Length: 142
Image (cartoon, rainbow, N blue to C red; front, side):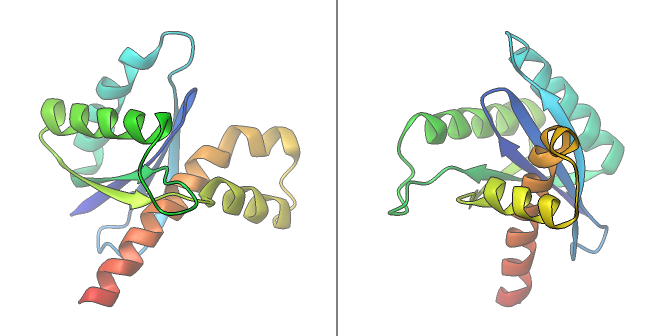
C-alpha cells in the first residue's frame, strides 16, 4: 500500500512516493503544468498510481501563516484534490505545506546541489517533505 505525495504549484507539481510499508517518502517526479499543459496532470498521475499501486494521495495545502486555507493556492489545491478523487477514485488527504519549498531548498543547498539542478528537483523534494510529514503523523497516531 503506497501513498503518493503532491506539492502543487502554478507551473509544476512535485510528486513523491512512499515505500511499501508507508515509513519513508522518496522524491519521484515533476509534472510540468505550465503553458496550458494542466490537462496532462491527471493522466500522468493515473499512470504513476497504476505503476506504484497507490491507495491514497497526500496533497499539500498552502495555508496562510495563521493556518487558514484561503487564497488562490488553497482553491487550486482543493480543485486538484477534487479532480483526483473524481477521476482516479482515490482518497485525497490535505497536509499543511507551509515552508516545504524553503525546506527543500535548504536541504538541497546543504547537499551542495548546484542552483540549476536545484530548480529541476526542488518540487519533488518538497513533495517528499509533505508526504513524510503525513507518514510521520500516521505513525504518531498509531
